[in-house]
Length: 65
Image 1 (cartoon, rainbow, N blue to C red):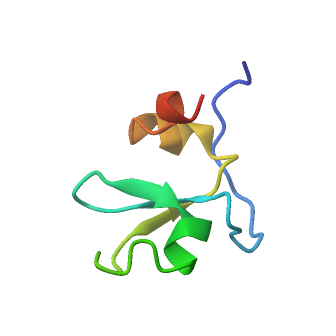
Image 2 (cartoon, rainbow, N blue to C red):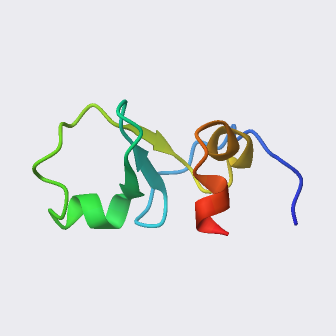
Protein backbone atom coordinates (compact mmCIF):
# COMPACT_ATOMS: atom_id res chain seq x y z
CA UNK A 1 0.00 0.00 0.00
CA UNK A 2 1.27 3.47 -0.81
CA UNK A 3 2.55 5.78 1.89
CA UNK A 4 0.15 8.52 3.03
CA UNK A 5 0.50 11.55 0.83
CA UNK A 6 -0.61 15.12 1.04
CA UNK A 7 -1.46 16.52 -2.32
CA UNK A 8 -0.01 19.77 -3.50
CA UNK A 9 -1.31 19.02 -6.96
CA UNK A 10 -3.02 21.81 -8.81
CA UNK A 11 -4.74 19.50 -11.27
CA UNK A 12 -8.39 19.94 -12.00
CA UNK A 13 -10.52 17.55 -9.93
CA UNK A 14 -12.06 14.70 -11.91
CA UNK A 15 -14.96 12.27 -11.52
CA UNK A 16 -12.93 9.86 -9.37
CA UNK A 17 -12.07 12.45 -6.71
CA UNK A 18 -14.11 12.75 -3.53
CA UNK A 19 -16.73 15.23 -2.34
CA UNK A 20 -16.87 15.25 1.47
CA UNK A 21 -19.70 17.01 3.33
CA UNK A 22 -19.53 18.43 6.87
CA UNK A 23 -22.00 15.76 8.06
CA UNK A 24 -19.50 13.01 7.15
CA UNK A 25 -21.18 11.91 3.94
CA UNK A 26 -19.01 11.49 0.87
CA UNK A 27 -19.33 10.59 -2.79
CA UNK A 28 -17.32 10.53 -5.98
CA UNK A 29 -17.42 13.85 -7.80
CA UNK A 30 -18.74 12.07 -10.88
CA UNK A 31 -21.83 11.04 -8.94
CA UNK A 32 -22.26 14.58 -7.64
CA UNK A 33 -21.93 16.12 -11.10
CA UNK A 34 -24.50 13.64 -12.49
CA UNK A 35 -27.00 15.00 -9.98
CA UNK A 36 -27.12 11.92 -7.76
CA UNK A 37 -26.61 14.14 -4.72
CA UNK A 38 -28.52 17.26 -5.78
CA UNK A 39 -30.54 17.05 -2.56
CA UNK A 40 -27.37 17.77 -0.54
CA UNK A 41 -25.77 21.16 -0.01
CA UNK A 42 -22.92 22.41 -2.17
CA UNK A 43 -20.62 23.05 0.80
CA UNK A 44 -18.56 19.90 0.28
CA UNK A 45 -14.78 19.67 0.37
CA UNK A 46 -13.08 18.29 -2.74
CA UNK A 47 -10.35 15.79 -1.88
CA UNK A 48 -8.09 14.55 -4.66
CA UNK A 49 -7.60 10.78 -4.72
CA UNK A 50 -3.83 11.11 -4.34
CA UNK A 51 -4.26 12.99 -1.05
CA UNK A 52 -4.28 9.79 0.96
CA UNK A 53 -3.45 11.58 4.20
CA UNK A 54 -6.63 13.70 4.02
CA UNK A 55 -8.70 10.70 2.93
CA UNK A 56 -7.46 8.82 6.00
CA UNK A 57 -8.25 11.80 8.27
CA UNK A 58 -11.80 11.80 6.93
CA UNK A 59 -12.00 7.98 7.33
CA UNK A 60 -12.82 7.64 3.64
CA UNK A 61 -9.61 5.89 2.59
CA UNK A 62 -10.46 2.51 4.14
CA UNK A 63 -13.86 2.48 2.47
CA UNK A 64 -12.20 3.03 -0.91
CA UNK A 65 -9.73 0.17 -0.47
